[in-house]
Amino acid sequence: MSRNVEPCAQSIGRRALLRSASAGVLTLTVGGLAAEAAAADANAFDPMADGFRRVVVGNTKAGKSVVMSDEKVKRNADIWRSSPAEPLGASGPNDLPSLLPASPPPRANEPTAGTRWFYAAIGPAKAPLDRASIKGWHRVSSISYVFITNGEVTLLLDEGQVVLRGGDLLVMRNAMHTWHNATAQPVGMLIAQYPLS
Image 1 (cartoon, rainbow, N blue to C red):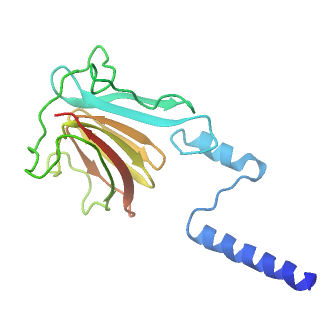
Image 2 (image 1 turned 180 degrees about the horizontal axis):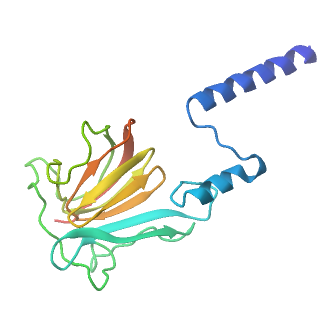
């Protein structure tokens, strides 16, 4: 009986391995290959690494949305902190610490208090990125935490843009923005919104 169990277990293991490889989720850990791959791409998400990438966007004193910081955050550190005195979190010397109105204005049924946690997906773009004609620009009167679950997507701001990848966390501080997915795959995002108006 033990002879039959071992081949069956090996067969199941091989089938699971093939399914994982075909789904593109095979993680190489033998011989430190995962560490080498993560080192080759500084923005690759590695759950075993000591931290992850956090991008913070906000508004300049002139009211233009920009990237305020793009850095690695160490494991067990605060991801972001806000307070009643600083509802958007700590402001830097060039930040606009006050809240700008939502654009477009919120619909009548949208909450102005409480929280919202939802999943969004950005499908592949139908055309190359053209800042002059891209649609979907908006600003929400909130602080939002956006976790990119997979793939690669470009966040466009009034001044500049930033590419976000699976495992990156975005702190969206009331900034005008839109999205562009230049890849062939949809990109998923988990978004937690905290209205401030």
